[in-house]
Amino acid sequence: MKRILVFLCSCLFVLASLAVGSGATETRLTAREAFRLAQQAVQAKHGDCILFLVTGTQALGAPTDGKLPVWKFRVFSKNARKELEVEVENGSARILKEKAVDSQEEFPPSDAVQWWMDNWKIDSQQAVALSRSNGADTFLKSNPQVVMGLFLGPHKGAGKWSLTWGWKILYMVPGKDSLTIEIDGSSGQLIRKG
Image 1 (spheres, helix red, strand yellow):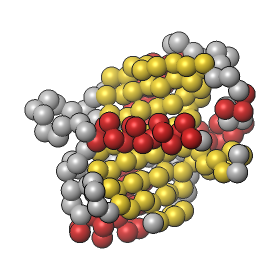
Image 2: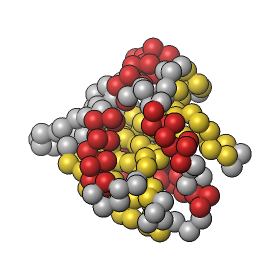
Image 3: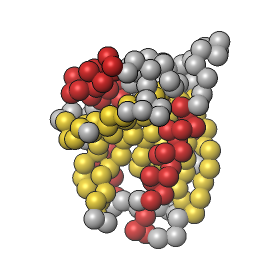
């Protein structure tokens, strides 16, 4: 769990430092659109890869609509006993790194993974729209210049995997306030706000 939090935080701050309006044309995708590209990149190398975590960050002052130029995905290959980090940037996917995984406990159960994939119904645009209708709009009116982090993954609590995909959307004003809204990835229901 600690590795996941470190990964999430590093993605958030690295991507948040991207320059806005650098003059280059951006290809902005939803999480599911980007996942299709990531899936093609990893399937050629490890056909048994399963999605575990989705992260994306919108730079300061950029549109907060759930479409991003950069998405990162963490996937596992049980056969190769590896965890892969895949990045989709401006419509191109590439494997950033692979690392061996020692413990079988690091992998979610196969039946849970299939359940997550079958029940990932809320894409990033919908998740952001739902977060805005559940309090983010008020926050954004007071804080129009935010860094937005989007995280999608299964919940793991008390050392056990849950059968729930959840979006965690973080609106952050550097050095000031932040708002986190969690949305169920299947139903779109508000899980938590704070």
